[in-house]
Every structure is written in C-alpha cells, then in structure tokens.
Image (tube, rainbow, N blue to C red; front, side, top):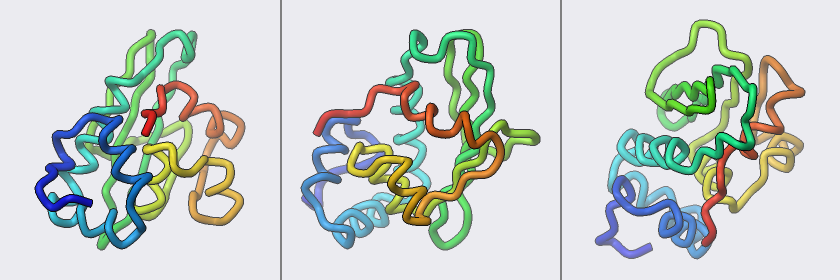
Length: 145
C-alpha cells in the first residue's frame, strides 16, 4: 500500500482496491499508520453511505460489531425506518453481535471475504439471531475494487 494514503478519508472503492491489492501485513501496517479507530470510523461511515434502504424494508435491528485489535473496538449499527446509523458504542440488547479480528473485518467490509466463509472458518463469531446475521451485509452495497 502506498505510504501517503489516509485510510480514514478515502472512498470505499479506493479502500477496497487497496485491500484487494495488498497482503495481510501491508493492510495492517497501513491501518496502524493511520490509526485503528479513525480507520474503523471511516469504514462504519462508509456503511452508512452505502446503506440500501430498499434491501432492509421493515427491518428494525440493532447490530453490534466488535472488532478486536489490542483491545475491543465496539460499534453499533442501527437499522430502523429505512435509515442506518453507525456509531462507536456498545448496545444494551443487540439483535446480533458479530465479533472478528481487525484484518478479518476489513476483508469482510471490502468484499475480499464473505461472512459465511469467515464464520465457517471460525474467523467471524456470531451471537444472537443467527438467522438474521447472514442478511446483514446484503443491506449495504459492497464497494467494487
């Protein structure tokens, strides 16, 4: 990955392109250079921007994401009334909780890996509504690399 790119400000498509073109070590190095929290903030902001209300009709869900990297980075995504809000927080009663390492989460949101394959390999842990979980990423456009 180029050294002069600020991952906290690039577009979702550019980020996906970088993730698809880099190895695991390069991805983690670039994220750590920018900072894990600013990078995750940008990813979740991108999820809000790429939300497809037509795919989430009648959904009312609080989704907890926990990204692990030298501690926990919890984010809540709330889908309600055709809107999507993402913020750094812990939910009191999430419908589902998705937990993964930083690299796994980045690959999932950049379209380099799929939720079912990550779950089957034990890289994505899911608790709560297991029937709802596979539908979550379908509520968002996946950036094209």
